[in-house]
Amino acid sequence: MTRLLTLIAMLAASPALAASGPFFSLRNTDFVVLVAFILFVLVLLFFKVPGMLTSQLDKRAEAIRAELDEARKLREEAQELRASFEKKKAEVSAQAERIVAKARADAELAAKQAKADLEASIARRLRAADEQIASAEAAAVREVRDRALSAAISAAAELIAKNLGQDDANKLIEESIATVDAQLH
Image (cartoon, one colour):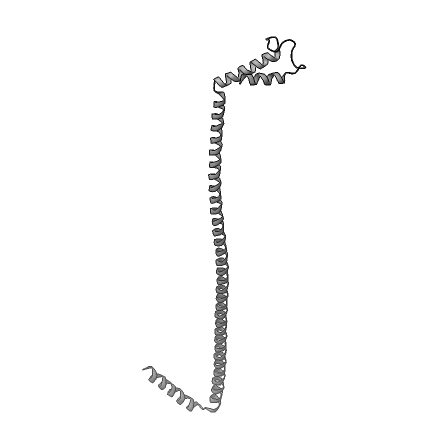
């Protein structure tokens, strides 16, 4: 392997880049750099740095895989939550529609009830007005009768006073007193 690296280093070192003198000399900077690089790679291999790098990369890959799994789970949970919220939203929307429909029905029922109550109130007031009119008519009829009766009594009294003599008047008074006395006792 070292021969292969040496060969590659020799091909890479062209006369323009090479230092003066023989290549395998410590005075040649290209050779020194090549040796230092080879030693650096050997030290890295001795301390198993590539193994540590691969293990760290594997750990990182596992961590990324775990994060991806967790993200997948979170995504599924989020989708479930979204579906749940969509369902709740639909339920709330349906409930709101039912509430609005019930409120409309209640308002219509209240309007019908108010209309019925108003009609009943108007009917009561009309009956009361009819009763007042009937009462006023009856009072007017009584008053007319009373006046007619008073007029008839006055007219009869005048006629009796003109046509009735003193003896007939006394006799009529005595008969009236007797009638009243008989009715009282």
